[in-house]
Image (cartoon, rainbow, N blue to C red; front, side, top):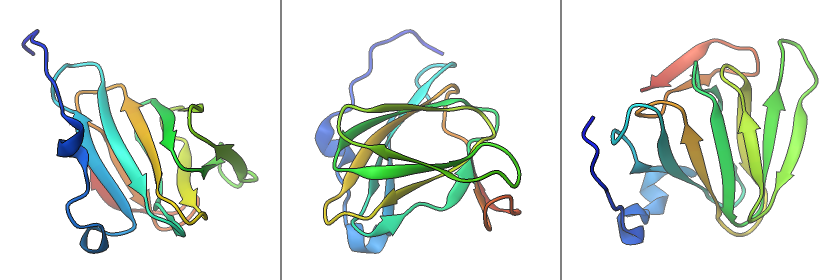
Length: 138
């Protein structure tokens, strides 16, 4: 990929119409710009949650930007779910293939950055914890 600087302005990442876009809004901040990493802005609306998912072969670093939420993780098949509270400034690491979910039980948006090790994010939405893949994104 070309080695050029690229700027994404904050206004390019604002949800256009949150009620139409759903409870979890994903915006590509730096996607397709290099071979080894990408960043998306994820906004989870109040009293909402993401699908249960894994990011296939991509490791993921999560940085909480604003609001408060919970990262729910299943580290192995039939393992007990772990709940990790996240607040602005917190980081989390989710290894490849680990099932996880973002929950927002507050009255404010929960916004985070997801940094993944690939040119664009890969995601597999699951029917339930340990369930079948129902949708993929890459």
